[in-house]
Image (cartoon, rainbow, N blue to C red):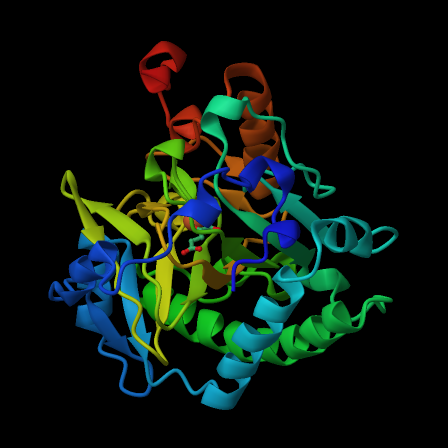
Length: 338
Ligand SMILES: O=C(O)CCC(=O)C(=O)O
Ligand SMILES: [Fe+2]
């Protein structure tokens, strides 16, 4: 099933062929733990439950989201098909299109190129990314990529409906001005990413995706039905976020934390490597209007454009994102780098 030729050369672990999976892979045991993540029902949205999840977790599981199961299954299938193509085909597939193919890091420049990282912090992931504003503006030559694009167009319409509904409920809880807060969630400002996390017998090679917070307002994740790996940091403890079919994981990003004046939190999360099974996930990120100014008692006035530029600068200069502390009043740059 593992098609070595399809993996980026950096992610081809030499031991891969010598370790067939045991009948009961130990990593699956953790998936039997009770799932601690708060559940939010979109059909019957309780504002107090949502408030509690945003304040205490920065992440929740969304049920009754209204996205057809057939669409979710089809997306997973076509994504699998796309990733199983030879690496060289995937590498060339996005030339001349707004879609990008990347591996080894999720940190990209605005034009979609991977920000260079040292081999010591290689993330065990490959992905395709596309800005939502471009999704309907290109026709990939590669048939499988075109199938993905068509499905993503339909999927995006659902996720925008979900994101807006959730954001409106949060804005109400935060008593934000209804008209003024509209620019904090811009329909086509988002992006979509499809990931594959190759399995690797030696999990010491690092992380599928290293610990981070998202820069978005909201991120909506459709993770593999079967293979876990997503972990959430809450109150100094890491939790496994189980894969449960037909549910989404919604996490709040840095922009939501800033908009809420730090009442809500941007979830710190990471993805572990599975020894035996690869994992597919799809992530939708939605951002504020690029020029919308965020300003309140905890933050100096700033726009998402400025935030993004600062993140890029920090990654280039010190190899990591500093994020929100850069924009706090009374920011002390030394303190935030610790
Ligand atoms: O694939 C996942 O489960 C998480 C992806 C993620 O955290 C991200 O893209 O920021
Ligand atoms: Fe993330």
